[in-house]
Length: 118
Image (cartoon, rainbow, N blue to C red; front, side, top):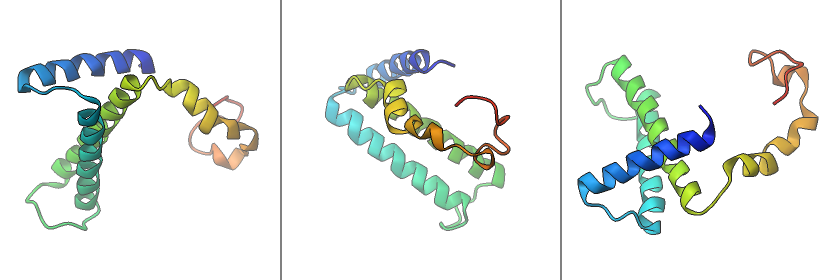
């Protein structure tokens, strides 16, 4: 799914969530909610890696919870980027993909054919 469409879809669902729960989606709420979601992702990671108290979940439930928290953190990050007019494609290009020229074959092993572009 394209990043812009994904961001649009997340924005719509966030508006629904706010309407249903009576939340004002202020700048503070968006950033603090991101922090909350990262905290929940951290907790889910601790559960997944066996470094938390037993919560009575099966292995499948623990993995599902972790995956869900990754999605929550990503969705909230998309909302923050959207609110503050951060073009994630542009910023990834500027901050991450400027290192393309240093890619060696072992860096792409198991990910894609060596000749593929990033």
